[in-house]
Image (cartoon, rainbow, N blue to C red; front, side, top):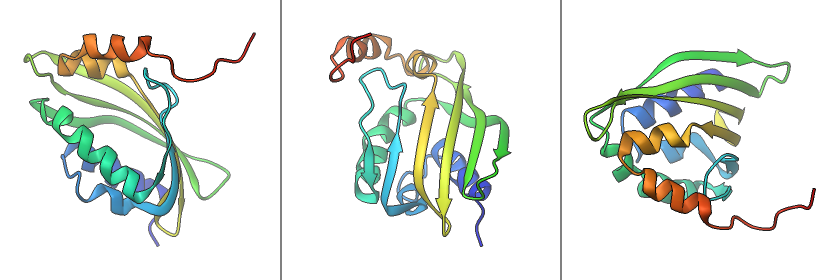
Length: 151
């Protein structure tokens, strides 16, 4: 049986290795993937099909990075056998030749070898700096992301 840690490693090494066509197969048909810190707001990905579209949209942006790898991986198992918390960094050479590091934390729930839930926390500023897209990130951050609760 595939463990949550093994699935996580396939995911992040697949992203770094630009194997975007294979990544949706790591997810259940119905899933719940969120990026709570996304500058343009969190837009849940709730199906394998939505994830295929997501990876297809992001593939060209990742391809703009000259070199890209995962480093400093620390996987924390939890009392729930389906859940792991993983800390790591995407690191490499950005589009302008500058080195970059983008810290990340993923919280994954894996059932029967497939990701059924994920919360992906990524340093979006570091990734935008590496891709040379800080202006786009700032513009996305300025867009309303939905209703804001009153304090």
